[in-house]
Length: 223
Image (cartoon, rainbow, N blue to C red; front, top):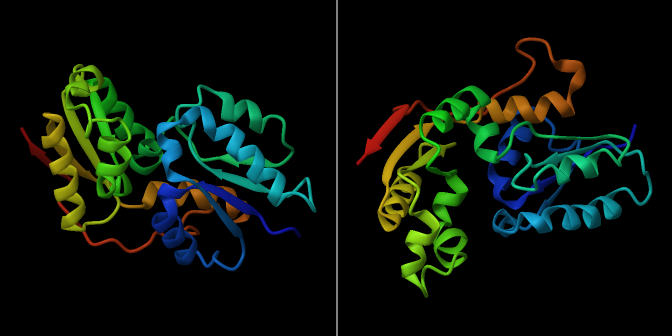
């Protein structure tokens, strides 16, 4: 049987590796990563994905593929591209924030306050490059209101309990002039989303191993 390939966002390297290792899948699947800065250029996700798929299915057009992406701002174009392929699935949700936090929590927070800017561990740690510099705020800080004038808060969905990640998320919120909220979500939802596609025969309760994560305060807010 052909080895599945996961073609994932480069922002998921640490978390995906942890999930694959916990489920003894590191040697069972191939993994390729696309540039993390596609977060800011969703119109480039599908063309870049096409190239990656062509490379990894050259010898087997029916090779099982998991896209390590949600819709991620493609406006349905990623799903439309998937419909062209014979054996492809993707992670659930509109954004990575949703498959990390779970649909129920993400939807409740979004419905309660649509003006929310979300961060993950990766985005918090690379806030300067992927947000501040990428949006030109380092050169034109006056654009802050144009980009974030309708936002009221930053919510960090953390996968780890690294205090440096929380500090980075809080610092990012302060730079944007927004309230900060921290929700530790761990990797359970992400592990379920990944392994249910890579190990369909093991969907029984208890078959999916979640990477160990120390407990952390589930909610932290800073005005």
